[in-house]
Amino acid sequence: MFGYNGKVLRINLKEMSVKTEDLNMDMAKKYIGGRGLGTKIMMDEVDPKVDALSPENKLLIVTGPMTGNPVATGGRYMVVTKSPLSDTIASSNSGGRWGAELKFAGYDVIIFEEKAEEPVYLSIEDDKVEILPANDLWGTTVSVTTKKLEEKHAKNCKVLAIGPAGENLSLIAAVMNDEDRAAGRSGVGAVMGSKNLKAIVVKGSNKPKVFDDEKVKETNKAQLAKIKENGVTGQGLPTYGTAVLVNILNELGSLPTNNFQKGQFSGAEEISGETLAEKYLIKNTACYRCPIACGRYVKMEAGEGGGPEYETLWAFGSDCGISDLKAIIEANYWCNEMGLDTISTGATIAAAIELKEKGYIKEDELDGLKLEFGNATDIMEWTKRMGYRQGLGNKMAEGSYRLAESYGVPEFSMSVKKLEIPAYDPRGTQGQGLQYATANRGGCHVRGYLISPEVLGLPEAIDRFATEGKEVWAKIFQDLTASIDSLGVCLFTSFALGAPDYADMINMVAGTDHTGDSILEAGDRIWNLERMFNLKAGVDPSQDTLPKRLLEEPVPEGPAKGWKHKLDEMLPKYYEVRGWTPEGIPTEEKLKALGL
Image 1 (cartoon, rainbow, N blue to C red):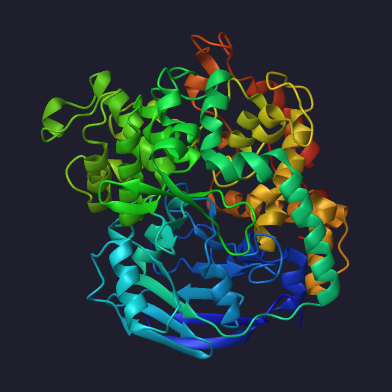
Image 2 (cartoon, rainbow, N blue to C red; image 1 turned 60 degrees about the horizontal axis):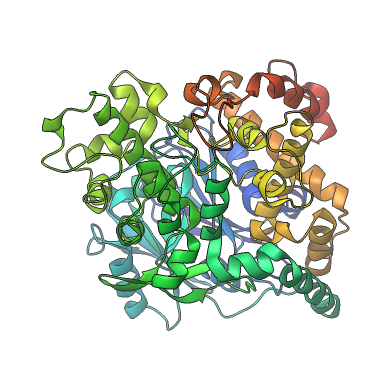
């Protein structure tokens, strides 16, 4: 057994039972691991029509064959479940060190079933697995929970937990690990909370075996060189983190501002990666075996802690019209403490500001707090209120779509399939907009990062305003990303590596015979399986669209002035290149060809 441990933990929270099962290796190899394997297990074991917050939904923690192995960025894991926010399949990715530790303990997958009667947490120390009471932890923030469990359990144990947002079933709640790493999107933290599961503590003592140790070292050395030589992974991300993108996107007129009403922000420099590095950065941080070290560890009013990513700087910054970097750093901290997805949290606040500006939210709903573009006074307080579901924060905890819908204007939500779209205006990045519209979990940038060729010129530069050929680019990036997420490595490696490199990686570690083409085929299989789950869940192709504003309202100023998104030109071609019907349904021939 190479790369994988071959073991699954099945936890029934109602019965308080723990079972160890053999991993189906044929299935694992077909779907690789992580996102793909988790989706396959969900499809086999859960009715896609299930209420996401009911005991009948399952919560899966799934590593990949590279997780915990000696390859660049081999520390990722996926949380896979049905999303309570979008009703789609949810697979949310996180880094840090927790995923590798689970692999060291001897497990590839944890499957949580049913719901505990009282709050509990799971403790794993190699083959010693216990379900323990968590009444004293319920209601505590992520950092408090983490520190208490670290004190109680084995030295150097790793902690995964939810905060008050997950406990209170906020539909934008995250699963946190290592205090400030987040499986953030799709509301996976709410599913964990719905099961009365507060945390998972893990300590392992055995690293998985690899197929060819010498070739792993040789391949990893070559791939590390590619990563360090690449301008993005070797220079931009280590120097400024993901926040290096703030000024870049703003100069292109594609930095969404004031809830996507504009594409440029006059205060961009004040919230940029350059300013963050100059005024607040203490040091870079890295996930397990990561040579990029894009994480930011920063100064805060309350001390020190994990700093904001690009998406967070945008969500609480330009999207809310706010240029107060100190306030954004504090809001990021409270997202981590509450266990909230920073993208959805900031974007929901931005939607709420516009709803207030346009007269839908009334002054008496604010409890004396400020809710206006450019005013940072209360964004930290709004974040806390969303976590605790207090006052208007109770509505905001449902995400921007349900918030706007409650006032009769769902079009004020900048979301796809009810998941808030991130920090790239699709009107100025046409391919990225197509990817948002078709992504299986909703408005997501990391299901196919077309910003790479459209903005960064990797692997080659393409016209960001053009529509021709974008359907092919979208499919390739989506398929490759599905495989990367399943392998258990970081998506950022794809700035420097391609499908053949990932084939080499898994072949040397797991003893498989992948090629670049078979890596892409596996991604295609995973993508189609996710699509089938969504269709069975009732998420139909009419939801492959963008917010009305982006389709009908041109960008008012800047380099993207006058542009709207031309989804209608690209979507039919996308369905065709996917091998789907004109209505967006995978054909029998397509499913058969992929072994589905």
